[in-house]
Image (cartoon, rainbow over the protein chains, first blue to last red):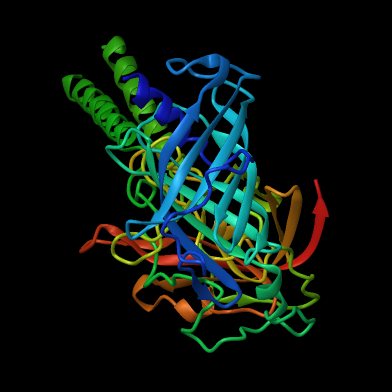
Length: 239
Length: 204
């Protein structure tokens, strides 16, 4: 139980600290770095993180950190079961529900640095985004976002991490903005700046305003009006 | 006899008031009349480097909301904010550029809830070209967009290329539901889409 509590807190703050692990030398990592998909100037890198170390600091392993408490974690990162890197995270709790974190993610071909405010909770499942603020090596000038989604049933020890970012070199190849650039560059149907193009429309409504929104009020009113009219009619007939 | 008449009159009046109040409180989602486009006076600003969005402000419809993020739904459509405490929080589509960066940043929000009335993008259909949308980002920059078009599309004819296609500037697309409910599916027939272009940036 102690382990699951601490790891769940960790999972909510994995990417927010900044400290490179001494043990960041992937045993079986590809020297070319992790597999990355490219769409236009945007890269997408997806890994599974698994906690290898945690230090809950003064809060201890069983309590939520208080504002000002510092704590940190480290993880191995893998793709298809093969370790491709590691990360080290350091956080400072800023409230009962948020912490300010910085992380350095180390791959064989460079590092990604993340920094931002992350939620902090004991929830089993969490999803949130953390800004990517810089990088080195193959990730020089990286900027973008990392999405973290904990893996169900692991008590926060495992999480799927999706890094979506540009680099200095990828931006250099991108088309530049022009005053005349108000038309779509790509032909309809093609898109590379959006790395995964959704199909069809979106189900973004519940329907509560499409029908009779205040049916109880209308129904009650109809009953009251009918009763009142009936009473009046009955009174007239009785005269 | 007078008492019965008085009771009847009061009941009838109360009923009338309830019906009137119920009808006047009915929310009616505004819809764009047609595909409205205006590029007049729109000069795109230079795109910013990527940084996740934090919040969105649209003064014209008094909308001020934090932003979450959404991904793809299992059926391949764009994800939507899930039921729960964040249902009314619009979501940035995390596979689109971050607002202010080169390309079409996409933000989706619900039109209404299942039972309790309007949601965060209920008034999106009121917007008109020329109005401004501001998105605050994690890097402290505020991306200011000018609306260039607003349109309603049947979902089955959703213009994927127009909404998600590559751009030579930093764009923004706001998406919500619209139109009538289709009895066969129980879902709204249309999507309302607001198209906007980055025209300025500033620091917080």
